[in-house]
Length: 114
Length: 113
Image 1 (cartoon, rainbow over the protein chains, first blue to last red):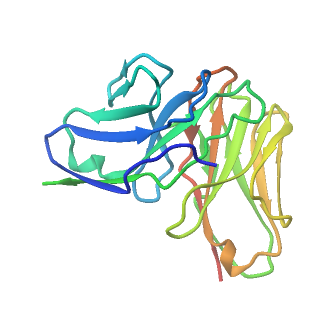
Image 2 (tube, rainbow over the protein chains, first blue to last red):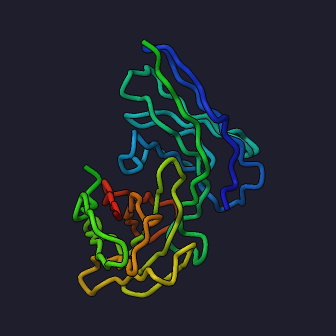
């Protein structure tokens, strides 16, 4: 079962930073926070993941609170192509038998407004 | 391009028939996961294979089965198809190790008529 809570929908103006929150108050010490997005029936696309430090890649930044109970995905300069459903998932990863799958919740439907 | 290949992209078949969906994982990935996404529904985990062996099972119907072959590609077999089986079927693959990413294919859209 999904162990994260996300707002069902958000809007963001094109060119602005999109900040997507996620609560994962029951996260375990060895669980990572993953973000994926799905653009209109395409395969889910990996965005970023982290354990406790903030992470940044070419797509986004991930800010994880010190107590690890929540995180924020930041798309620095949102474009229309960023309109998608964004999923926040906690997962240990391959190697921890029984906790390897990605469990998708309902995610946040992000709409970028021109 | 995620490196995960799924075939066919589209499949239309009649009720009662049997189909096979194929997934080729990224090079070096030992684990394959199958997901089902019905119209306007979330992604439901079906089953996971790791290096040829079943690793975890989700809400997979008894009419459905899967396997992973020695070359690590995987097949999902759907039999006695019903209208309600119409959905997108996604495959993902992942490497060994904690905190590794899983990458998804572009899916197979199955339509049962």
